[in-house]
Image 1 (cartoon, rainbow, N blue to C red):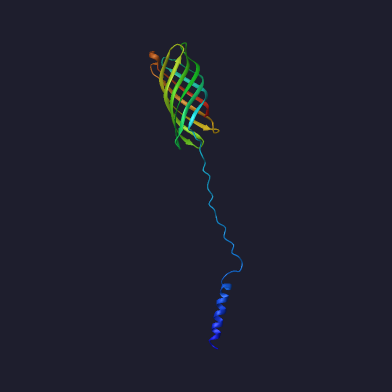
Image 2 (image 1 turned 45 degrees about the horizontal axis):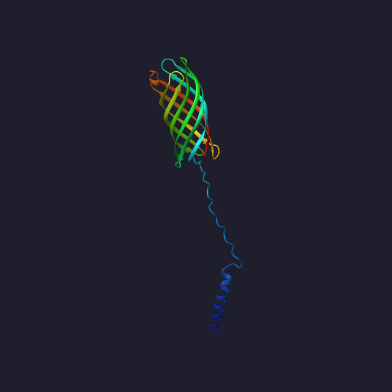
Length: 194
């Protein structure tokens, strides 16, 4: 009979083990922590055609004491391509003015063929520009020179942008007259993007 008690105790212990090993209440799973995606600020897409207008101020200086300043404004059109962080484009400007530069001469209009390249700053674009400029006067004729400049343009909506631009123009020996002309323009522009 000595051997039956340990066998009975062992059988009872084995039967009770599942009851003693765990909790009788159902296990509630731990909540899973889901990683939250940080929203990425999408910058404006500059790829496409645009057209608009500009208005501003021009200061004209020429050898021989000819100089003047006044209002200038006109139309702009072009195409930009967005490479992600950088934007490259080309366009045309046509400005009308009636700036008296002295000597019975006034600047009538300026047309530009331009290239521009810039760096995106959120919804903005800071850029440099250069190209050819053609100026017409009422008495000195017309001449083609060059210009360089810089500007900033900001997307107000998906299709509308506002900006500003400063350009320096140089015309050497204007129309064979022996007069060198330089002009600086500062203009505000608004464009619709297609």
